[in-house]
Amino acid sequence: MTARFRLPAGRSYDVGALEEARERQHAQVVCNVLLLDNTVQPFRANKQDQGRILLDVVYKHLELTERDYFGLQLADDSSDSQ
Image: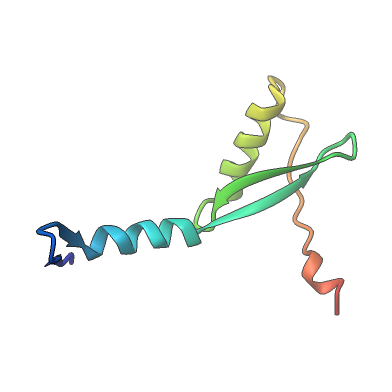
């Protein structure tokens, strides 16, 4: 459901579009991927996406054609700080 409000200058204000843009912005996370050469490369991904999407982005970045030998492993750094 979207709502439109009139601003004093005659412009319309679309609340639904603003909320969707805000949700898209908050729904993205930065995933730091440690590559085999010990470099860390940041990638953006949506929280709702499956890991396969992130893996495909990494493959594309590395220009890999042979993908059967590689995968992703989740490492949660937040538990190390406690």
